[in-house]
Image (cartoon, helix red, strand yellow):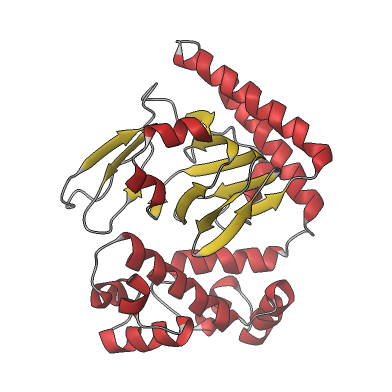
Length: 296
């Protein structure tokens, strides 16, 4: 599924909606449905996805501009999302939102796969937290709830096949909404309600982490004192606002080191560091290794 930077040296790979353009370590994907180009969704089995991709793509870390849902129905394996390994087994539900980096699930797994653009689902208030860039990556679906999600995924895949044959896409869009609502209900049952003040901080952090790492700036922008912002962050995560800000910058640095061939200095400049040495010191403090060692 994909397009990338126009300046990249172009080496194309096509399969199951993946059209990858690579340059060095670059592996960045945009959505392009191979069965019906204007449709913003693809529903298939993990085995089908694997058959259509090269071994290199299956094992490479990549970044996408679309949502990826994996519902594991059998087998055991693992996947990596944003440099955290997640074990997978029956009942594992994975959601990789746009911008996160992923290595596709490995091991003898069977899973439903649903890929869709941010604009494709119907606008539903209850699914917005699920589709935000701040939601969890992995859930475990209780045995009592698996049949319902499995059936919803199968219905979605069947309707997708009908759309590929030329049927209108209105029903597949609504079935995606049903699938997401069922997941959102599962998420709501498993987690306490979030603090809207912390959510505002998260949104501002996502907008501004490349321009400021000063906690006082974020506090002012969302209308709280620095002390109040720290209390909000500690209550939500156990960590201070400054710790969360630095972690977000370090995560973006890891993503860029892995999926682009930008130099360490260029990455530091992109993340708001005026000197390459300052970025190197920051990265080493946050991760325990140099940018070059992490890239290797």
